[in-house]
Length: 154
Length: 381
Ligand SMILES: [Zn+2]
Image (cartoon, rainbow over all chains, first blue to last red; front, side, top):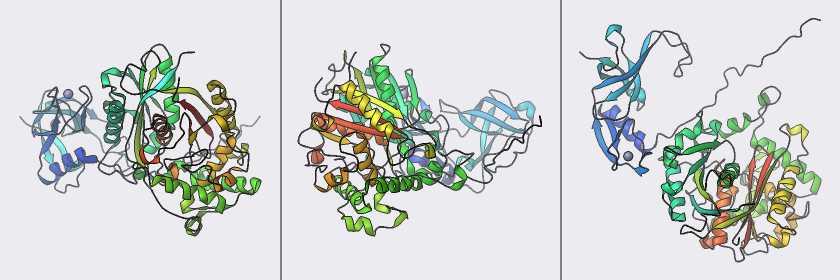
């Protein structure tokens, strides 16, 4: 018996666009990195934990936070990976050029880790515990990419 | 069977766009209002059910966005994807399970952040239907025509639902669209999809609602007067529209019957004092009332005209202003439950109805009422 043709329907260029409200805390965080190249976190009044990126509530203590503190700009790599496989870049829809470094960064004065790119010019220096600092974008639009990446400092 | 009660409710105002607030910020507000309403702290809550939709929220595992603010840290948290009445159904099952005593249930949505017609289009089957562009309004317009053709109800008759509900919203500070309008205003509003005009359709909204459900063993331990859950049921119809009789809603008839039976209600028309139902479109209020046995089929419009469903009528329907006055998808059914609770406690303020011992709250999942959830709540145990 001949095999029947098995069809596929593609969604093509159809998109499902969203406009996410950044909210009061995120808006402060991004305007600070955009306008003043400053990294800000929120400190819990109960446990003292400093959250970066900031959010309104310390979940553990179930209290609202409104004590803004400046963190960084320097920090250390909490953990990292170097991407060798070209996944689809959510920013462009194209394959993302490889290799590039990706890490969780614990900024000085913060208790949580911030996700960002890590410069891998010298891969031998990309290690957990390595000191890093942010490299700001020339043109800053009020998003995560206000910072281009973090680079290793000796 | 063990009993459960609702011992606290909290809601944010319903607005077209809550730009200052993320999902978490809205939920934090509603949760704290519910806790304070109940006279509880988060330590008194032993598990959490959040209700959200990944499609509407534009993120996967959307409950993760509201875990911290629901006090879910180190607690058992689970999510229901669908209307808030279904989240509350699961929350109630947990309170009855023996494993938990107090369940906090939340429902949140921000229609302002997405293109609602594209989201509801994505509810249709991608193989056969989606490409045609059907969305919630288009599908409901077809249901409206089917219902009107079967019953002889006219668009002007359904328009009166919009007049009544927007008018009720004038007395509800949480409502998004309080309006003093006439049937002529509805009939003069823009035609969206025949026979539905703009004022026949609920708006796009942002909002969050939270409800606390407790097992009877702890229901009177806290400050708030418990409102008892007497009956609840849900029932689902076919997914494909072409498989259903769109002029009717057998799933709702069944869900209502089961809820009445569980509550021991023999004559719902006599025993139910008020209704908060899912009026996403004006005609739906009439159809849902009929399918729940609260009016004869095709006859709800006449009773509406006679004023029976008004705030001061024999059976007030949507005294809050309903979905037509604010429709945060997902949260909408939970708002219906919270509204009935306030009414039965006598705490509804300016839109309080006179006689409120037994109330019915209704939620819908899927388009044109694919699935219905019916709650019978009572002031007395
Ligand atoms: Zn804390």
